[in-house]
Length: 169
Length: 434
Image (cartoon, rainbow over all chains, first blue to last red; front, side):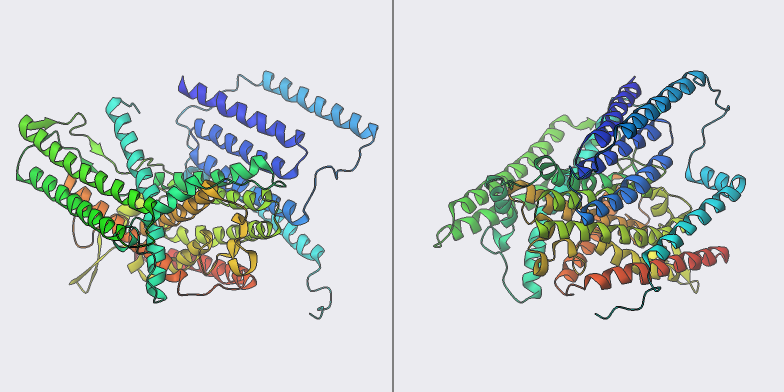
């Protein structure tokens, strides 16, 4: 009973703050609302008996990635109202695309609501996740790391450190 | 898992004790900081309110409450108001997964005897002596010129409440004496002095600690002040950088314990290393050579993570007026102050838990009784208190670094050192040396 109350409370928080992210004009308010939404999502993980995933969700998304978002927003000093005006075609495509995506989401949710979970206890502690990640899924894991490494190397190359001659101070 | 009424009451008592202690650490630490800095700089420090200026912090707190709360016109009102709360809530909640004493079995009943009366009488005597000393000092200073009525009132109130506390203790003793023996409702069950014994405890600490930066960043941005903004930007970059070395330095302690649960980490440190079959050294992580590197990295990163000198770039007063809280006044400023000291306390508790054996009393096997619990809790508090003093000591001894040096040592020195130490600890574990 109390689990239902907690679920609906935090589900409402997640949805409301997700709406604030896309509807509010101020980028800083948007970023902070996304943090709140992520936090509510972490509570969902706790309710699913996966506190490890909840902690990682907060550490990685709310604690690290969103701080960098805020850092960039503040560094560039983005002001609201400086968004480029969109053409009617772009607006139409945006609404149509999101409507299509929403309908597809509802369709698949309805279709697969009666998913069968595997029997036995739900193992989600650090050890179980580590063993699964480094034994069954070691190849995709390494591929993802190489992808991230490539992104970092690309960012370094684009920022042009070392390619340019040293500028005198 | 099922709960009954006693469990709920015990949990509420635990939360009340821990949060009460944390909130009271703030005025005490402010006093220690001011007197300590005075000691280090060969000054007197606050010595007007109460003996040795002990209740100066209460006068300050009252002043904070009574000051006008100013919100700048250009500020983003909502975020400006929410920012101090963003800072304070993570600081207050992090302590929930830290064990602060040995688990013990609650006795079924308290029988009146010399031990009960002794504890009550000694406690009452200490409170009464404090009350008399405070009352005397207040009366003495009251006759001096330039002594404010506010300070006099606070002194009288504190002295009277201390005296009432002493009377209450004597009342409890007399109550037990007339009843003969008091039956405790939670008798026989195990009392675990930790609010939430999570199996991902240390991750929860890092998760909440990483949220603490939002208070500073939001305050810096919403104040509409360039100095505040600089403070917020600096803080976000600094705390992101040092979170990494902090977490990687903690990994070595986790590897030895083989668990993310903080009670397991403390339990691992309760034994002994025996040197040459004669010398018994407590099995604290700080005594094992594999841990020294990570301990140093962790403690220095803890200074950076809590924005304390020599790393307090978010509020570097020589460059940024007061950094992120330049525009803040009244209780909102006090909340930033509180979250800084509470975060310091939590960090100290974490250092004690990871490297200094948590609540373990050296060379003593605490029995699972009330005495064992009290001794271990006192040991834990003493260790945390010492580390808090180290925070103050370092602040008034080492000058501020430069910002580029801070980033350089964070990424180019501490991060590689922490990773290297993980390999070292793994080697030690593989060789079965620890």
